[in-house]
Length: 75
Image: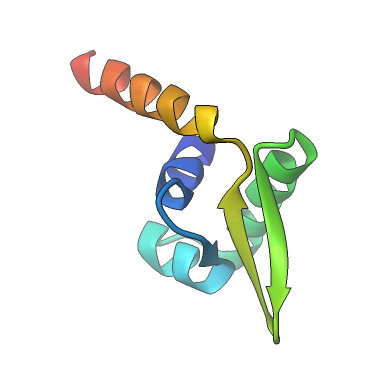
């Protein structure tokens, strides 16, 4: 799931509600996984009104995630 979250955040920032709708999982699950990713420095967040938007922190992570996703597709 974390890979899916990061892959979804590579091109644009997103809020938790949208991520839960796209992934079809509970908000608590998404929030917990985002907390792990934030602690690892993979994503960062910014409050915009009553929403919190997340984005990938480092450009090189985009390439890494694409390579991992490609490898998973080949298996």
